[in-house]
Length: 363
Image (cartoon, rainbow, N blue to C red; front, side):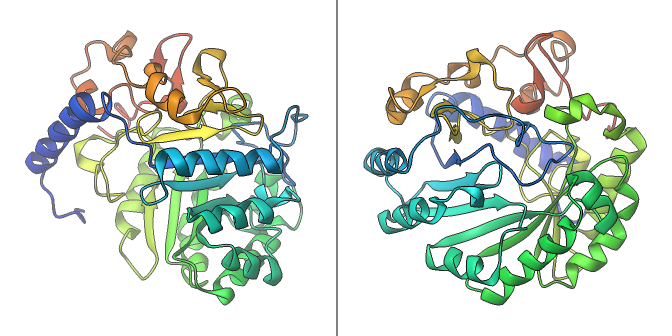
């Protein structure tokens, strides 16, 4: 099934152009488009896949409300608000008592912002306040049917509260995008079709399907990872259901998928945005790239309390902008020119090889 309308020859042409752009334009001249704020590591759920071990970590040195005001002032002065989007995440960001103070301030400065949430705290009143403070987009995590979701999130009743939170957002209205995101693993992959039937009836117009990754807590539970047949089933499902109805189904941003599947399960070609389009400010002020990337000292680029983000963005992040990952099994791979080592969040910095590679699975 081909739903992109692009043949292999055209895709290869596009991928070569993208590779050239990555090496000759984007890496030498990166453009900050998405800035993540990790407002908290606290969470009211204990998700079995959490890459950050949220809920386990005792926060130390958490940024204050006033510090966020100062950061927002700096970012606006240095980067403007026209081409920059704030992405608010956690933990569960709504657990911060000053959440609406921070986001109201960002809204007054003219920032466009969206967030990720588990949805359990989104009452009708919260949905209204999110609208008032200018939230444009939100992605709510629903990881299976009721029993599977509650098991995966380790909180009884989570599914019901999450689905109610989605309905509260939809009833409030006025948002550009309300999306459901589902992490697919060994125990819920059989529910894909039923999940589609239920989610498509909610009124949500976008469902992002992603595979569980060998990071965070999931590294300790390898039995949850997908095998080759399950990967094939997931991607085939996305491809077939992508434009089936009013709710679009799409894959996340992770991983180069080969010429057959690229553009069939998402609107864009794979390009890891870490450190070239994306940066993050962690709850304690540390500056990094994608928040899913392992928290290693060499990957922390500075701290917002002592460093100005503009200076860090322009002078550091070299580890994300240099071509040094052509090693191990990537060294002689002809597809390296397209994937450049694949996603940074699943790159193994000890063995210098990717922990996830779709070659041998999809092609």
